[in-house]
Image 1 (cartoon, rainbow, N blue to C red):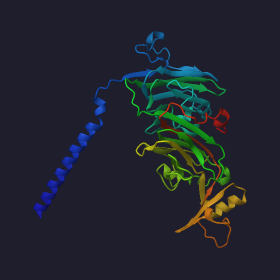
Image 2: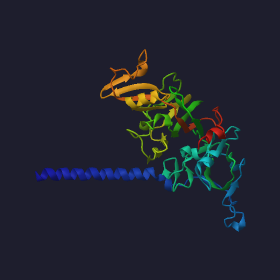
Image 3: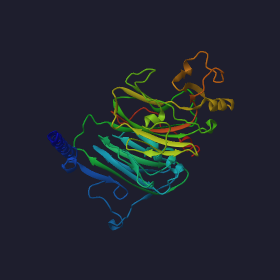
Amino acid sequence: MRLKFLVVGISLLVFLSCQNERQTSGDIAFNASLFEFRDLEPRWNSFENPTSGKGSGGQENQGAKGHPYDFLKAGETKVLMDVTGAGIINRMWFTIQDRSPQMLRSLRIDMYWDGEEIPAVSAPFGDFFGNGLGRLVVHESKLFSSAEGRSFNCFIPMPFRNGARVTVTNEGSKDLDMLFYDINFVLLNNWNDNYLYFHCYWNRDTATTPGQDYVILPRVEGKGRFLGVNFGVIGNPVYQKSWWGEGEVKMYLDGDGELPTLIGTGTEDYIGTAWGQGAFINRYMGCPVADTENDHWTFYRYHIPDPIYFSREFRADIQAMGGNMKKQVIEMIDRGANLIPVTLQEGQEFMRLLDSVPPVDLKRDDLMDGWVNFYRSDDWSSTAYFYLDKPASTLPRLAGLELRTYKM
């Protein structure tokens, strides 16, 4: 018996030793890029070196913090980066003195690749950096962070072949007293034809139409990758703070017609939680704001471990759908709430109400009690991030200031 245990023990030690060797080898291979020399020239754009020129930084005040920040008056646009040649932006950092929701939606950030006149990125400043509803909170994900809720960091790689231009515009009526930034990138000696251009699309519908899906990303043509999305939802008080997040995400790939190839099972399911949605921050998914008092919600999902590629075309939607117990849903209907019942469930019984002809009357005496999912009308906004094999797209231009700042 002792011999048997000795053999098992030795086998276990050998196994663990092999695992440790594999792990060590894997770590060395994985981190090799940290200690291998690469012929890439680093550059930083900031107000201390606005051209990112070699040996051109810190020219004011004898190099002693002569131009750390600048002002951005109402109606003004500042060019923060304008370079020619090939490169990859690998980090952006900003901070601003006025971080109110109104300012975060009034500022517009634009990015242009390869001399295009149409921006590939055009979004409200706060939303672009992962802060839905203009609400800046401490967070860190794989793509964005705000270490103490006062800064804006982006780590999305953004290749460009012939040039890059980044601007910020103050479309509000209030001057911005202090704008700090730096944009970090490397120059490339060779362009890889497999590189894709980074794009972004912002959308808002202040009152979704029951039964019509909210548009995350309209149809784009070309070869690319859907990187992810962050959302903001303001619940409609007519639904008495009932649960709003039953909607399923739908993604249409390469010729999909009425039905999508990719579809989820619910809103909180899409970001990796369940049975409701509280505040949490993870690398690829999270819910920075879960404000039940005001019915404000922000949440995100970044498709990095589960990449979504497309070869010809892509679009993405989500259903604006919620749920509550049948009794409460009937009360909302009686009070004039605009909703469409979708399903009724109790225990193992499940009714697909939209398949019923004529429509099911929830007040019917013989109908079971239970949970009712229903289409509803809420205020949805979103920022979708994606890559495309072209430096510009045909997507609609960014919505105007009035829509962006409505009830902010």
